[in-house]
Image 1 (cartoon, rainbow over the protein chains, first blue to last red):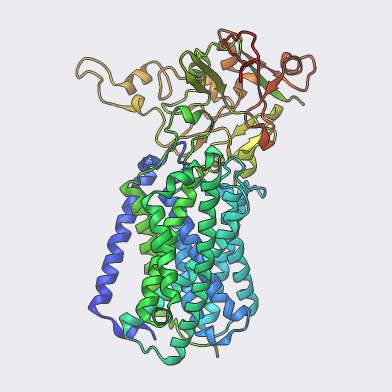
Image 2 (spheres, chains in turn blue, orange):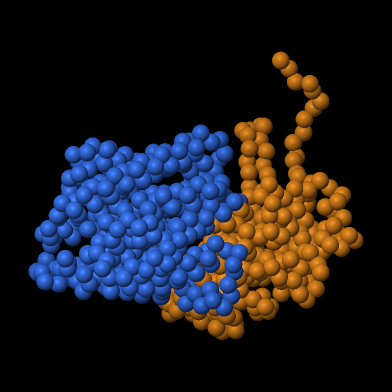
Length: 374
Length: 241
C-alpha cells in the first residue's frame, strides 16, 4: 500500500519537519565548510566524534538493510519477497545518510578526487570507498529492477556480498589499528557485521510497523506471520549482540594494560549503561516473552530501543580506542580524554537522519514498496 | 639509497625544549600544532623520585602505519626513507592519527595562525593589526614566515589537513641537518644515514644499547634513544628480608 492516496495534513507536517531539519543541516554544512572541523569537540587525541559515529551507524544500517533485502532472493525464501523493495529503499536512504555524515567529517572533502587519482589499495579505508560506490550502483539497479517486479538473483547476491564486505571492512578499519589494543583484532569486524544485521532488521521492522500504524493499512494474517518470524530472527541476533558486547566489556575489565582503562572508564558512564540495559537487555527480554514479541507495540518499542542502543554503541566503540592519549599527547591532555559534543555535531546527525527519512518518505509516496514478485 | 635516522642521546639532552621551538620556527607551525614534542615522566615520591624526559618526533617508521592506512597516498615514503605528506591529496580523514602509535601527527582544526590573521588593531588607534604587521614585513600570514620550508612542501599547511615532522626534508635535500638537530645546544640529536656504516648514527647505534618507542609493534622506527639518563645514586647493598 502506498501513501500517495492518503495525502493528509500529517504528511505535510512531516515533510515540513524534515525540511526544517534539512535546512538546519545545510546551514551546518555551510558553517563546517567555512569554519572547519574546529566547530566539533574533536582534538588531536579524540580525533573522531559524533559525525563519525553517525557515519558508522548509518553505514552499518545500510549494510544490514541490504542483507534484509537480498536474503529472500539469494536464499529463495519467496514468502519474504513482499518486503524487498522497502528494504532496498531504506538501505539506499541509510547509505546516503552515511556518506553525508562522512562528508561533514572530512577536513577537506573536496580532495576526495584523490581517491581516484591516487588510490592506495593497501588501505582498508580506500576499499571502503570503492565498496560504497559499488553498493550504491547495485542498490539503485536492484531497486529499478524490483519496481518492475523482477528480482535478479545475481544482483541480489552482489548486494548481499557487498553488504557483508562493507560492514566487516568498516570494522577492519578499526581492527587493523595495531597501535590501539582496544581496536586491534578480529572482534570489531565480526561485531560490526552482527550489528549491521541487527540494525537492518530493527530499522526495517520499526519503519514498516510505523508505516502500517500511520496509514492504517491492513495487517493481514500472512504479513503478521512474516513479522513474527522476523521478530524471532531479530531476537536471536539481538542475543548474540548482547553476548559480544558483554564479552567485550568483561575482557576490558579483566585486562591490566592501561589502554583498557578506557573500558573501565566507560563502564560506569550513562551512555554505556543505556546501551547495555535499554539498548540490549530490555529489548531482548521483551522479545523472549511470546506475548510481547507477537504484539505490534512490543516490536516497535524493542526495535526502537535497539536502534538507539546501536547508535550509542557505535559511539562508545569509536571512543574506546581514543580515550587514552598516545605518546607525547599524554603530557598535553588528561589521562582519559572524553569529548562533550557541540550542537554542530548533533546537527550533522539530525541532517543525515532527516535526509534518510525524506528519501524513504518519497519512496513510500511515489513507489509501491510492498508487493510480491510476479 | 640512504636510510635517514636520528639518534637522541638522553644523557646529553637537558630537556630545554629548544628543539620544539626551533621546529616551530623553521616549519611555520601554528598554535597547537607540534611536530617535535616530548614525553615527561615523574615517578616516585620525594626523596625517591625520578624524572625522565624523552624528546619525540615522527619516527619515520620503515613500516609506517600512517602510510599503509592513508586511502589517498597523501602520506608516502620518500627519498631516504622519510615519511612525507602531500596536503593536496589529504582528505582530512585523520585515519593516520588513529593508526600512528606515537601521537605525533597533528590536524589543522582551524585556519593556521588565527591570531596573525586578525585585522583589528592590537591597541585601538595606537598600533597596527597583527595582519598588517605580517604584510609590512613581507611574511606570509606570519611575520616570521620561513620561505625555505615551502620548498617541496606547503610552507603553511591549510585548514582541514594533517601535518607532521618530515625530518626537515627541505634542508636534508640541500645537505643540511634537520633544524632541531642544528639548534640543539647540547648536541643531543645526531642525524645521518643508517645505511652508511661510517655515519655517526650507525656508529652510535652499534656502540650503545639503544631503544625505540613501541618497538613491539614492528614499525621499525628510525629514531633511536641511547644512554638513558638517571642522576640517582645508590650504595652497594644486598637488601634485607
